[in-house]
Image 1 (cartoon, rainbow, N blue to C red):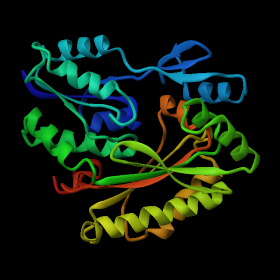
Image 2 (image 1 turned 90 degrees about the vertical axis):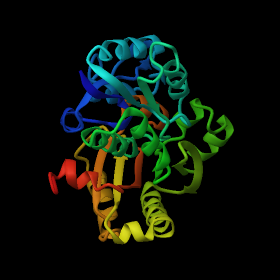
Image 3 (image 1 turned 120 degrees about the vertical axis):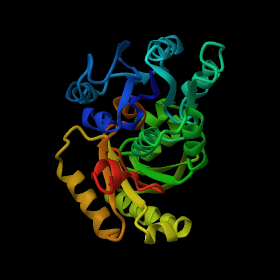
Image 4 (image 1 turned 135 degrees about the vertical axis):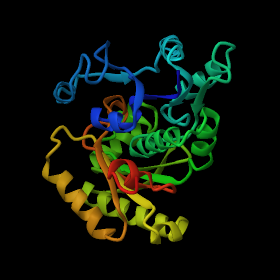
Length: 308
């Protein structure tokens, strides 16, 4: 039997190539609801179809946490092939699914064999954790050792995200209807931050152009304050994400160029479309930038094929 199998959900925007590089044993998709019907990204709803739905202002979208019974069935099946499982999922600060999985992992049939990582991450920050877990598996580490490492350094990251519309934050209860109405009238673009796995307000500006500049400034300032030595050593990587229908849109190109121009000394990790279940909360037109500390040099070793 193989030693440790890596199981993930789709909160990290892992492509098929990414999953192959990370040797992911299984991906458990998180569903989302469109006009009362349940869908799964890439299975019965494409990226393009989802954004076409959002063009209709009457479209209603929401999310639901994965069935723990589905998750446990995946574990049971993989434990026939692997001695242990490491499960990396959406931040416990953004969903109860992580805590539900942790509780399930302590049931007798899984206890000591399934290790649920509460790394409090999402998007490209979670992608970094997945690559780190994959590398540690290759180094012969146990499930408990991998969980311990990822949770020890889970705070080595940060992200800022600007949303183009307040509609979806209002639906999620993060802004009141009155505040959303005033914000929409004034064309206010809120900037949110994720630290410690939770989504909090950071700033409000009057345009996405101003939001882009504000997020880049905040990201660079935070890196230099929190991880100056790691940055000098080339261990702090910039990551980006978006919820744009046009993957090759000019605003995305401009934003990436602005980030790289402002942070030429920092290596670049990835620029991913946000998972569709997350777009249900951010809405279309969201932009995010942040960073992760790569203490083990995993990006160079796995993604770039260096120093093998």
